[in-house]
Structures are given as C-alpha cells and as structure tokens.
Image 1 (tube, rainbow, N blue to C red):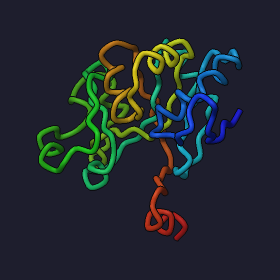
Image 2: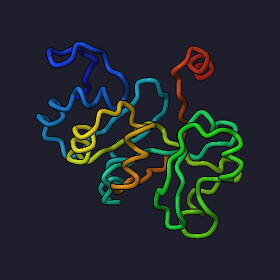
Image 3: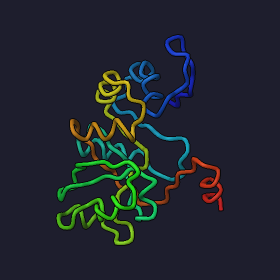
Length: 189
C-alpha cells in the first residue's frame, strides 16, 4: 500500500524527514499486519525485484536490510557508505564522507574473507546505501516509537548497527538519485 503525505489531527506539520514520514504512518503499518515493511524514496531511478530483496532479508534473519551498491570514490562523498568486517557484517556507516576520509578508508570491505570477493570492484571500492530499506515490523515500530529522530540514513540506520542485525542486499544494476533538476536531467539524457 502506498501511503501519501498528509496532515492529521495528531500532527498538522508536514514530514520532517524520512523516518518522521514513516513514524506519522505507524498506525497504518500496525493496522496492515504486515510482517515486513519496505521503505522507498520517491526520487530514485532503478529497476529492482523487491521480492528478492525481502527474500534476502528473511534468509539473513535480518532486523533491517538496506539495498546497497558499489560506487566510485568520485560518487562516494554524496552518499552514505557502509563499512564491513571480513565476514561481511556491517560494522559502520558514514554519511557523505569527505575526500580525506575516503582516502583513509580506502574502501568499504577489508581485503580477504569471502565477502571481499563478492563485493570488490577496483573502480568502485565503496558500498553505498541506496536509501531502500526492509524492516521487520516490530523492529521498525520499536525504533520509531522510542525516538524523535527524523532521518533513516543519518540517524536510524547508524544507531541500529550497534543494536540490531543490519544487513546489506547488494544490487547489481543501474541506480540514480534524481532528487535535483540537474540529476534528473542527466538521468534522462
């Protein structure tokens, strides 16, 4: 079910961020009885089989799954990057790191281990969030009802890495953020 932005008797203000938008729709999510909640941004262009994403979430026994893709060092400063350990577990998240930080990191996945061979692209050493999330419903309710933070990428996901099973789903295909007129134009060209 697609939930549109709305003002309600409980809140006359418009959405203050991605997490705030979902928080203001929690009654709809609870009423649906859905076991998993897929959260998408409206300013991205891509093709993805959401069934495979949710299947990965279930197979990995994740609390949260974030769709991710390899990116170049040139594109990385505009994105949220995951840091992985040798086993492929997410151990950190950096939102829009500067060039100096990227040079210090060198990449998202340390050399060695089975996950490195699956994700390593010499020209794309970083793994970035696509802003596409699957939450197990109870985890989502707990995270949003017990905080007032407003953004998934900057606040919810980085904090959840410490306390929940946050997994990545690697997307192997085209993706573009078309949230500006320039990026929308470039994607159309």
